[in-house]
Image 1 (spheres, rainbow, N blue to C red):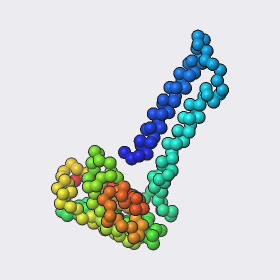
Image 2 (tube, helix red, strand yellow):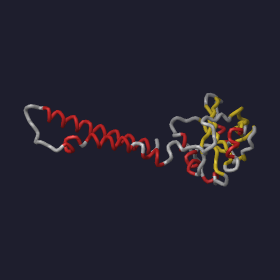
Image 3 (spheres, rainbow, N blue to C red):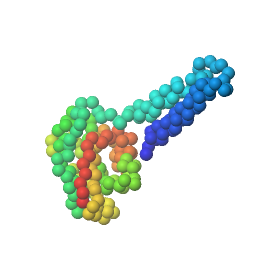
Image 4 (cartoon, rainbow, N blue to C red):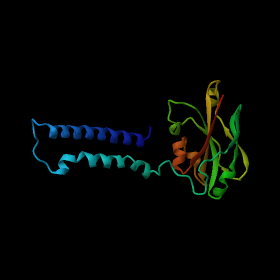
Length: 199
């Protein structure tokens, strides 16, 4: 869970508290037994605009980091790049149709990342990933192999699911310096397609 989840959770908890506060104030004002001293409108109803401000505040973290990290201009809304995929005794491979990426071939390369599906680890922070090198976008079908370590290959037993992520990355980005999808995204990479298969 990233910080955006915790910000939204905190805002909702505060909003719930303000709602309860406002409800108690309304009950006190409506009670015929104990009339509260006359208040100015902003003292009586301040929780309402406060909740509205908090609701708007929930969106600030998403806007500050670019929402879901927008793709470069010129790409289709939905990309379907994977044509075939599988594994060998020492690698995971995929045939990728890069025709839909032809518009950004001058500024970006393509690389693949694979991981074993593991629901106890957040996908973007999983450090047990393997990645290919960065390949030039040719505009056609290209086979990309991801060398897989012996440790990961040993975990690829029947019943496990292998996930393959296709990413576009700005040319010249030092992708070798990071070990997670989150780290790749911090370098400007973007996930553009995903496929998975059972071992």
